[in-house]
Image (cartoon, rainbow, N blue to C red; front, side):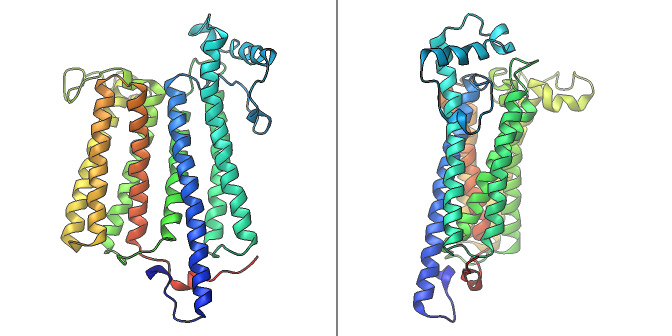
Length: 364
């Protein structure tokens, strides 16, 4: 493989290094698939108003769901104490409660699963000397970020258990963004271990690819605010919003900046502007990449990224005008991760392969 060419050392060592990179990369791709599923199930949990159905944080014991009628009644009684039940779902049956409970339980179960699937193989690869030295701090940092994400998840849920009937949009958007940050870092690390046939791109292409990641991640944060405020269920027309390209009433709250986070109309409008901005940047990136290095694999990836952004924009429009049906909304959320993951892989490939000396592995 081009990424593993080495000028010294026996062929057996080269093959061993290649095999280790393949194993670590394959493991990270499994983790990526699980994170993708976790984010989509998290979106379903939000859209079905299931996120407050489990009112306690039990990182270990909570993996076991209610197993008897008495345990189900106990969980239901805890839910009946919070404002969401008392103000919105009063009179809900036990069977209806079970439906929302299973969504939240599945989300937490997947989160625990990602933790185990990441931590245990990490320990195995480390202890058996299969990790390159430069990977170790990156992977430990990723594990720590995953632990932080679990705490942020409970911080988010706790915001809806006392004085609110839903979770804080600030905390929800933070929770979603950290999940996506974990996803993109894992993608960058995995892509760095893959063969690179195109070599290193020009500085302009690589830097633009990096800014595309930032733009997509900001747009995902804005989408989290939209979800947290249920802003997608209003103003369900396109391209006009409330009868105009730039609707009125965007800054009616005081201070004016609070509208950017708490006014559903303003938040949805900014999310629309964010989508147009990401699309424009993706098209400019295609022009820039083809002007600088026409026909290269980097330029072709820039075009694929632009096509993915176009597809995501179309899915977003359909989701909006259909008033956020569950299926379309989950496709929209899943596509956001696809766009982010491809943008991250594109940027990493623009940097070219790891230097051969990085393949040296030492036990520790």
